[in-house]
Image 1: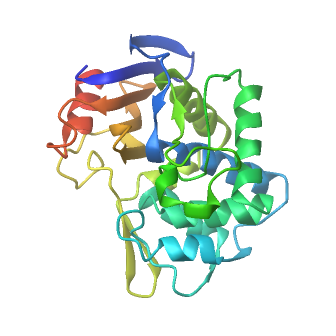
Image 2: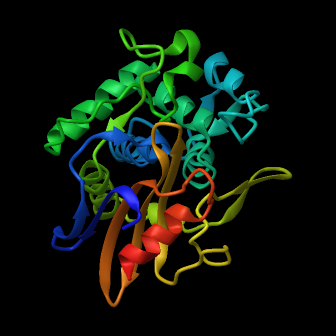
Length: 262
């Protein structure tokens, strides 16, 4: 597969069908958000919040929304429901929406990161390093960095780690696929959320069967993508990290995913 790291697993049995340097931790960028989403579903499950719970947008995530490099969804109303913010996190990869959810659930993003790390340990994942709920590089977060972390730290996991998270998310909360298969949805008035996942129906790299999950892009992570697809009656999870020519070719991670699924 034309990527630095890759893995394919059959979700029902957990059988690994393909791997390429799949256990080396590397940047995961916004693929982090599938773990953030898992923690949101879990908090709803436990009755800590409901989908209609209103979330106030603090200055930290709000100020990021005016930085075009890190955010694509304005949060000018400063108050949204949990469901609206999860949609923005998963469909448009909105960093500020992920941070706002983290703050709502745990009181602060750093406390939320601790619960994410604890969740990973429960699943046997001990080689991941997490610093935030969005997947952004610390350089964008100023004074809001995770305590003790370096100015350029970034979330790292292996392709296997990402596949395990995706597997738990799909098994425990299959309804997430109803969100991740959407290419766009109304967010607020005229504000539309649009996907970065160009392998979904109606997009340039459409592949039948794919109904999620999450793209990720940073300098460290390159162009990455964790997918779920229904292929010949099988539930498949694929992860490609740092696709070849991902910087020049917007389709690179989807081409690599297609090759892997084929």
